[in-house]
Picture (tube, rainbow, N blue to C red):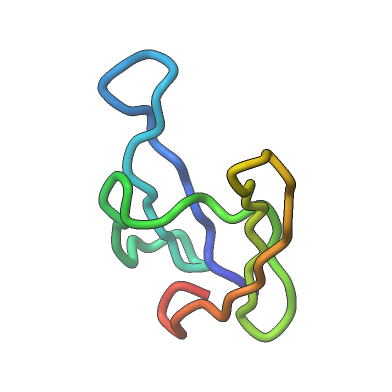
Length: 72
């Protein structure tokens, strides 16, 4: 099983806030402060997460990163 990532609302109605991480059992693991990381666009096997990033010309690329063990 994998951890759950929950994006909270920011100070403004349409802004992103902190991301809370919960264990598969629903226990609180920790929080990424606002701006520390983006919410992954997809999760993969072995603790990998995919992020879609845009360059200066709005060309999309997929970046895959391995998540720390405690937030998988």
